[in-house]
Image (cartoon, rainbow, N blue to C red; front, side):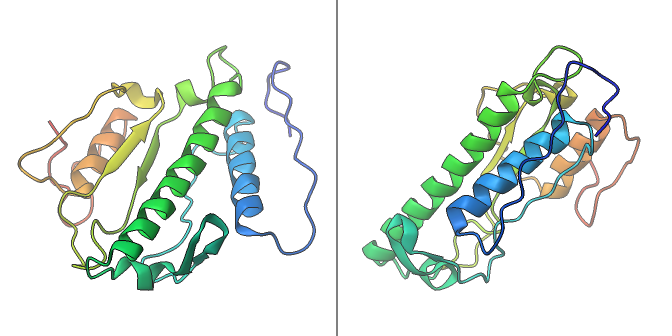
Amino acid sequence: IDTGSSSVACVPPKRTEGKLDDVTRHAVLAELIALAFQCNVTSVVSMMWGNMTSNRNYAFIGASGGHHDISHHNDNPDNLAKLKKIGKWEIDQLAVLLTKLKALPDSDGRTVLDNTLVFYSSDISDGDAHNHDDMPVLLAGGGAGFSMGRHVEFPEKPHFGQLFLSIANAYGSPITTFCENGKTPLG
């Protein structure tokens, strides 16, 4: 891969043969995402580990059963404990990716994370109630000039479209709407 910079080594990792277990597959995806950004192969990556109806089994972290079935917890303490384990594992995987991005030098002398904006969220806030209120969103990285290291609450309950409009505008896109509810950027 030619990046136009001699300071960045862009060597694809050795291809793993056969079916990968969940932990290995996630590690490979993180490695490929980091490499793709570092090597300027792409400036956008979308990764969805599973959709809201996925019944992925997280027995490998001690949360056996289908994720979707567990998310309909009915306040069952066992299912709530499993959801916490799953959520922690997923955040740990995000931390792995962010750590990789932070460790990679970019062509401008900063890190890949310094030049990246990572959006992380769920597709639902409470699977039992099919609730979308108070959706947690995490933004990480230094791309587009967003201020990190803070917690922001919006009492007016904005829509994702407003956040995506804000992100697009921060990257220089002059769009004025994003989807159904993205009519004004977040203030």
